[in-house]
Amino acid sequence: MRKNPSSLPRQARRDSVYEYVTSSVLIVDDDPQLRVLLANSMGDRGFKVHTASGGTELDHLLRTVHVDLIVLDVMMPGEDGLSICRRISATGGPAVIMLSALGEEQDRIVGLELGAAHYLRKPCSPREIMATIRAALRERSVSHHGERKRALDFAGWRIDLESHELLDPDGVLVDLTDGEFAVLRAFVERPRRVLSREVLLEAARGTDTNSYDRAIDVQVSRVRRKLKSNKEEIIRTVRNEGYIFVPAVRAL
Image 1 (cartoon, rainbow, N blue to C red):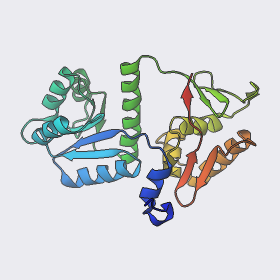
Image 2 (image 1 turned 120 degrees about the vertical axis):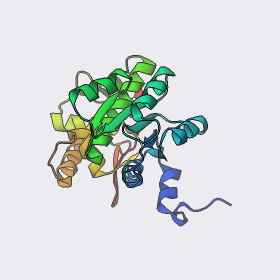
Image 3 (image 1 turned 135 degrees about the vertical axis):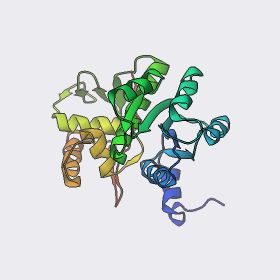
């Protein structure tokens, strides 16, 4: 017997209705409190998260689960992060972001030369880590699949991510401010996923913004008006959670 979606828990209802594109991240750090903090932050943003306290657990997980990216501490008992990074890179493993209290230029250079995609100095905020993870995943996608398609199509509309141009279904150019384009880009790169205001703020404005949630609401409202369609809803408000970009997005 098919269950009524309203009788399911909120997360189960969401997964039954919305399509998620989830990346898998492995956090490797000997500090259990930091592992929990990062895992919760990444999980709240839609990532599938695994954790390991060191090289042995990391190796076991890499044999049993798919991992797109590793957030790796440098200073750990046993095998250190630099050694782990070296052998992961040598075997063409997942992208690596290194976290370390050692933040001098030479330390960063060593980590990057060993194959790390990025090197962050502790302490750093979860928002900075999230922005770096997204950048590393984009870079890995480009390296694996060649130059990304820069033009996207949704519901008859066309957006060019290089020229920052938006064409309506009739081929008419729609004027967008820089802020409106940044919000629309955040949506089309994450279609059919519930995006919180915080996620939209990070994606559209970066990690240094001091804007409040209301600023995103205003920008979303402006983008909505410019994408007005008589055929279908394009941006839907999800009460108490954020927004979802409804149409499927296709690379041209």
